[in-house]
Image 1 (tube, rainbow, N blue to C red):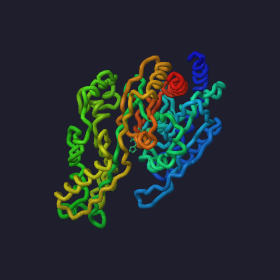
Image 2: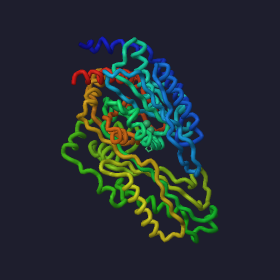
Image 3: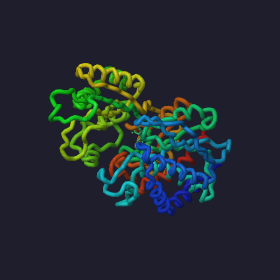
Image 4: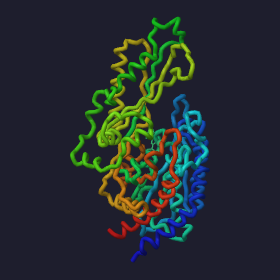
Amino acid sequence: SSLPTSTVLDPLFLYIDEHQNEFVQRLGEWVAVKSDSSHRVHWGDIHRILNMTADRIKEMGGQVEFADIGTQQLSDGESLARPPVLLAQFERDPNKPTLCIYGHVDVQPAKKEDGWATDPYTLTELNGNLYGRGATDNKGPVLAWLHAVETYRATKQEVPVNLKFIIEGLEEIGSDGLDELTRQRNESFFSDVDYIVISDNVWVSRKPALTYGTRGSSYFFVEVEGPKLDLHSGVFGGSVHEPMTDMIALLGSLLDHTGKILVPGINESVAPLTEEEKKLYKDIHFDIEEMKKAIEVKSFLQDNKEEILMARWRYPSLSIHGIEGAFSDSGSKTVIPRRVIGKFSIRQVPNMEPSVVERQVKEHLQEVFAKQKSPNSLKVTTSVSAKPWVANLNDPLYIAGRKAVKLVFGEEPELIREGSTIPIANNFQEVTGKRVMMLPIGGHDDGEHSQNEKISRYNFIQGTKLFAAFFYELSKLQKDQ
Ligand SMILES: C[C@H](N)C(=O)N[C@@H](Cc1c[nH]cn1)C(=O)O
Ligand SMILES: [Zn+2]
Ligand SMILES: [Zn+2]
């Protein structure tokens, strides 16, 4: 006979409310660590934040291990030891289900001069929002999990599930090495895990959500190399094949003005839309006008809610990110760059296969380049290569998620997918065979990867309650079955 829900959860919720300032302060300490994985100069800070995470876990009685995941080949040709993956576990009771929580403590790059209103590495509270790089992606949610564990301990209640953590520092550049580690530890670390939960995305409206799918991703580097040195465009312009001209032709061949990907074969592999799936988009709250206002765009490529959501979640997209080597400062330099590297990525959906997409893109670019009849050299390389992930919504894990959301927010969660990528999500499901769910706590307007990234104090604190309630609901699930 179990205790009434309120007897268990009320003291936890009270503790969380009373300690919210400490929780916010700790988030400030974490945000201050510049653990930007995109550049090796910050990798020392990734080690630092992993150590801070390990210290918190140890203080709460957990055991930690730093698992080696090999070396990373960098774009300058050098290789560098990757920051390890933090594997942690708490005392195990064979009568309780085991939940493994995944998160990451690296962040996207951020500079004040990119247009941030406040310093990105100084957590700043304004109008109920906590601004700072990593506040929502993903330091806030990782801390919220740890604070939920702390809350059980501090209120002298047993955590009702066995807990394991897998925390990495290279998610934002594709989680290289983590797939191999998952395979290596499948028979050990993962063997007694029942469920894997990830909180590394955001809601799609003001309503709380459970996420059952993410898109995959492949990242492409297209290098065109020409003359030995940069050239004077007045002297050589009109007489040489310019690498930038080749690059514009290559990048311009990838998609049209409607966003349709023009690489042959890509759209054909997308899983067909069924009537049943189509219905799922109807009830989702998504305010087109509010979103237009929030990101200051005049229109979207699609003109109704269902089509916008499908374009974000269940169709592929191609985004061009930049051209290395191209003149990008202010002023009017007149050189012809000798070598340029175009960068773009393709978000992938069922039934696309990253290795096939990568081959299709390379063949397409080679064909376009051949038509340029350019003597310059072309090299296409790839990174990331993450598969899309879709979970079974009927899995009991989603029942526990729904109940916890209802308890904390007083309403049913929306069942959503996610347009961005958690590179390891599909591997967790395929390699370990475990059930995977995403339980986001970030708000729809948090601005992940953007200037002025934030998490609201409300979402951070209610999110901590959600995780505490989720442990409870997950343990009841086992007993109810
Ligand atoms: C959803 C998650 N918070 C995230 O931002 N993931 C990154 C992962 C990625 C993809 N390519 C390289 N890293 C993303 O979706 O951009
Ligand atoms: Zn993230
Ligand atoms: Zn991210």
